[in-house]
Length: 193
Figure 1 (spheres, rainbow, N blue to C red):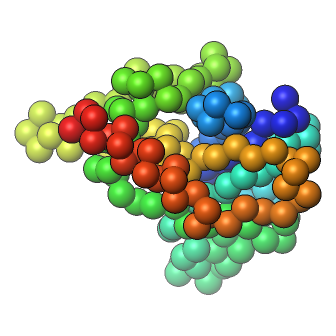
Figure 2 (cartoon, rainbow, N blue to C red):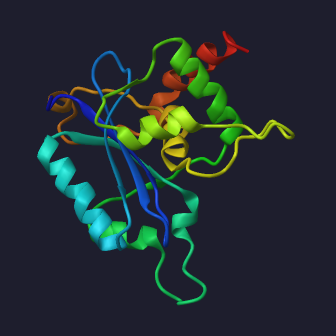
């Protein structure tokens, strides 16, 4: 609904398909992953696709986080970073965390406590979830075909709060005001550790 708040996570790639995860959050503050983009395209096209979807929903963007590597200029071509294209399209992502170990703990807690939901439309995310594996020798996750999974842990690590768009009058709520959400996540993950 239009009173939902969008939280978007992006794992861009210069060669592989870009992975974009859209979650909506209502008053329950349980993220519902309902749409995704998994497409090889240039950065301008990616931004246009994101903006088209945001306009289609009519919802506010509560947070937009992107893989930190997106801020690195391409050393071979001296081209602008992927992140620089986003500002041209009035999208202003923040650098997402790369804390995979904490992310795995938080994702497990979210699944255990039913604190994240997926719609069937998210085929790529569901495909990656069903194939997520660990190296039997190291116990570490295998880093392949996991772009939506990176978006998922970043979605759950960074607070996904709901606010009443009518009362917010279009003013963004600073992320520092989300401290109680972080406290709640900490208590959720202490309960499973």
